[in-house]
Length: 183
Image (cartoon, rainbow, N blue to C red):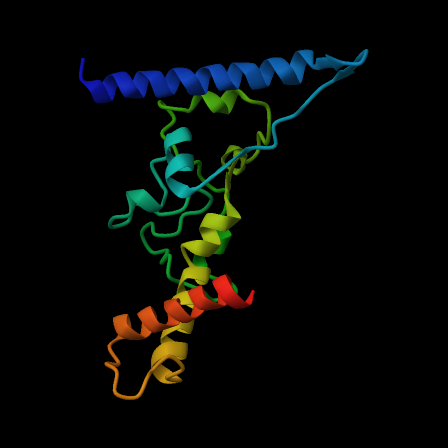
């Protein structure tokens, strides 16, 4: 048995145990100070790779390729549905929830956790931190750095090289001084 097969078996086993524990808590509850509470599992939150692996997704950002799809919630990136479409009524909007992102013969053990039967893919919830950082936020920050350092020239120094790395080094030194001495 290959070590990756063993790792897959271990990971699958952990997901199975997690699903069993969630179901047990939801059905049997837990007693605290004489009162029984019935917790519910609202979903699994994580970044794209974690959700894709836990949900056994065949359609998510890491499966990008011609007509393979890049979103577990819709058919963006599939044939005729461009994922780059940012219009208010993009073509992919009407495909949300139409098709589960996993093969019917290979379903995650987490699918046994009670939840949204009509749209089981909504159990897997993207982490807002990663979504912002890896998309809009990342572009905003990188463009802001270019604007401040290159276009506005705020960290250029007379007689000093204006290469981006030199400008970033001066900006970092300025920020470091502020944090250590002025804040």
